[in-house]
Length: 432
Image (cartoon, rainbow, N blue to C red; front, top):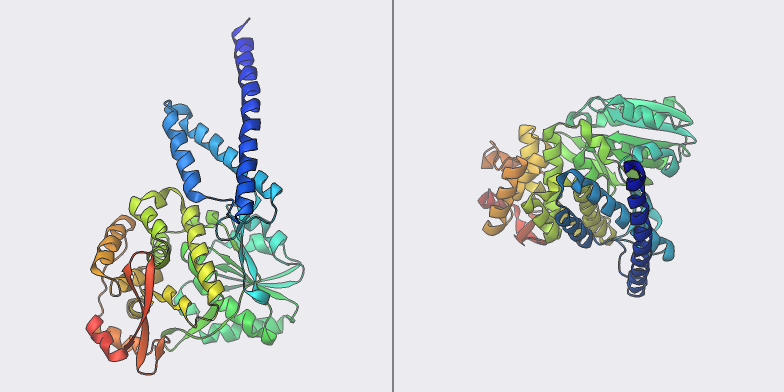
């Protein structure tokens, strides 16, 4: 027998054995699915899958094939999840994540008549027409810092697209642009049955969302966030607004999108400052609500799987928004670091996430601050800003979170647990 025939016979023998073991494995998967279904447990278990991958990496000594074996194991886990979903179609994964297809997940935000889906996965942008109703007149709002091909990719799937581009940066989120966009829609005969799609970061999402909320008392709004910050934060929750008189988000509304597409591949064109800004916002949510995600940041493993960081951040905010859509209570914990951070951002022009990182250090215990600073060193986040206390105080006086002579601050004494503290505004000076 020649070498080729011998090698093929080995493969055939291994394949037969693998088929036998695969059948045994899927029987075990079925038992697990039944157990989870009976107890309303999620299909997806991130810690379990991470453990399986670590174990898989440890049993292969040959570095040349180790990475291939890990991919093989990941494929097996994906097949197992799909099989469990087939057996129990109503079963949800962690926090409400459904597996749409390979690599694409659906996160359902349950808000009664305002409920919507977040479609998460690499390549999700190419599926826009599957999840958005684009068979009508569509205003696509983008900015000069977003690669043009992203907006064009959406336009190619629309029946009647109109691309509207604003200048990159926070300065574009103003009343003047808001008015111009409404006029543009009116001039192009948009009706209440048409829609608006944001393709960009938080500025595009806030501005386009407020336009959608206001035009003819509301048209459908879709969001495709293209920065890490907007993917983990502003893409979910329904806050839309513009700035006024140098103060952030003074004029706005709560207006939920019809659907959101979060595609991590869109982050590949971002500079490192934008990545750091988004990581800061995710770290904020971990600090207030998810000790396990915080530990992922501390271990440095967040650098290996940005998709996991995005997903866990979305699930944190999803849960909070579902319980408090209009920010009457619990949702205020998402303002951790924002009271001082907004002032720093307005006075310095610092990126939002960087300013929030500085702001968080003012409203946490010394032990939490120490742990945060060690992560800041890894990410490359600032730990101080130039404005003096009097300058910061002047901006905080106009903070929309102020209530008469008091202001509500989010304070973290222990990782994963936040509390709301109401204090007289003048006491902020002591804090600063």
